[in-house]
Amino acid sequence: MDQEKIGKFIAKCRKDKKLTQSELAEKLGVTDKSISNWENGRNMPDLSLFKSLCESLDISINDLISGEKVSKDKYQEKLEENIITTIDYTNKKVKEKNTLINIILIIVGIIMAITAMIIFPSESSWGSFYSVLGCIVSLIGVSKFSKKLNYAKRILINFGYFILFIVMLFLIDYISVVNIKQPPRFSYLKETGDNMIIYKAPLYNVYRINKDTKNEYYIIDTNKIYTEDTVPITPFNRDKSGIDNIIKYKNKYVGNNSNTGNLINNLPLSEYGYVFKIDSANLKLTIDYHITDWYINENHYLEKSLLYNSVAIFSLIDNVDKITFNFSGKSYQVYRKQIENLYPNYSNIISNKINKNNFNKYLENKMNNNDFVEDMFYKLFVN
Image 1 (cartoon, rainbow, N blue to C red):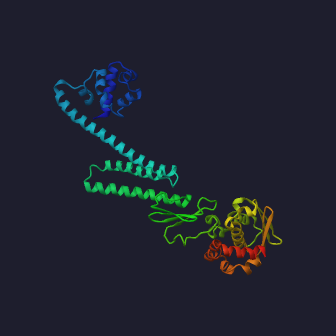
Image 2: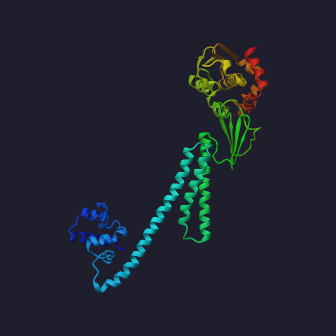
Image 3: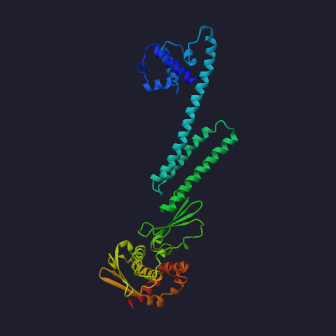
């Protein structure tokens, strides 16, 4: 169909009938803009409007499709031609409509899957359910697109799209696990230990340590090198207080207030609030915590924190000589000489500025040994 020619013919017939666009639109139950679009050749009237449009303009459907008045001697010829044209036009419209539906299905499926992963908590089964449902909806759209292909190509395209979609979901899930620190949605096995939950995903494992506490942290084991017995466990938030994070605050001088403050803020006990004072002349550091000491000593948490903080501060700030930890009603003091002389393998921790592996081996891992903690705390803070 020649849309431009038909549009001009509609405009001419309307004017011949002395009808405005608004009047014709009212007769047909459409908008003025629809009439304008027809007459400017931007689109065609819907097939369901052909009869009423022709009656309003006193023309035949044959005239309308031809875009001109058809003479009697050419009427049959034009009728046959227009029937074929109409069938082609109808098929084209159906194809365009189906294409639009397929595109909508694909987009809606993708949006449904991504939205489900954003809205629902990672451990909610609804998130996984709607993500998979979105995959199915999107796959239906792709399947409809590939209908005209042979069976082998259809299977290849549909299967390939399904795999790519699943890979996309797993990739989004992995990015969320790494950046947001949350359990994986698509884990096939969940194991609960004494103070951890292990999520086993197809390509990696996630260890959730100190679950549901202030010091909860995650270890993403992409190489699957850890087990429940070998995964690094500390009573503190390892992402915050571990050597991989706090080593950036290594400094020669305790007088660097900003650096010292950042270090203290990342060490255990900072979660309870604190203020600190520096005596640069005497190389002393005093930290006043806003908590009572005995109140936080379940499972030796206070003792482990003071021991960890002392070794960490002396290792990372070269010239501090004395640290005082103040709590409501009680204080604890420790000197660098005590750490150097009494703490096992301290020299190995500070070798080559800071040896991360030795820090974890001789300090972090030792915080899981209550007997060791009690013995060292007594030697350093009580005697």
